[in-house]
Image (cartoon, rainbow, N blue to C red; front, side, top):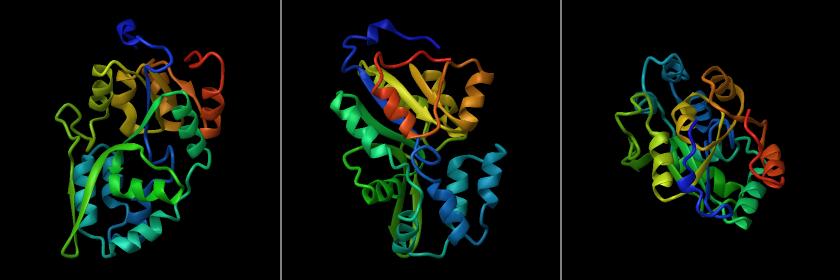
Length: 228
């Protein structure tokens, strides 16, 4: 993975931290919704896992089968497991003048709902949009791009956006929706499926298990540590 030294203008303030959400910061919110409220359960999600359909196809098709109000969805989302060390991680990043944003192939509204439940505010979110109107769910994809045909959010484009602003990008993720991003990012923290992918593709990555590990890493001197 190439790093552009021209982006390293200020070693203290040149980092932006981009994190996946579902499976990384919290339990997968879409999967919770599918299992609780969709008449087809995980059918379309399983097709996505097999690479047979895209995220937009999965979300649109599954939400057509959901019979629940927005308040019912929100109540369920607030029950999701949430990494208890993420708020401290955000605080430390801000203390060090590192910008933090979430880049997710899930739903922005659901992520906002979960973050607010745990007292995390003013974090930019790049994700798919859900709109509530006349008892139906409409989903839109403002970050979709043909360069990422299976994704609702082309995460590598978000990385490129911050590179264009002169930032070095630290990326944190756990799974398949993060593959494009890790090839574009400068520093990668990976776990589970994403860590296996990075090793198979020879993408340098720092293993982690949870945000307690990331708090420790952020507190280390020097930061960031060497990738393996």
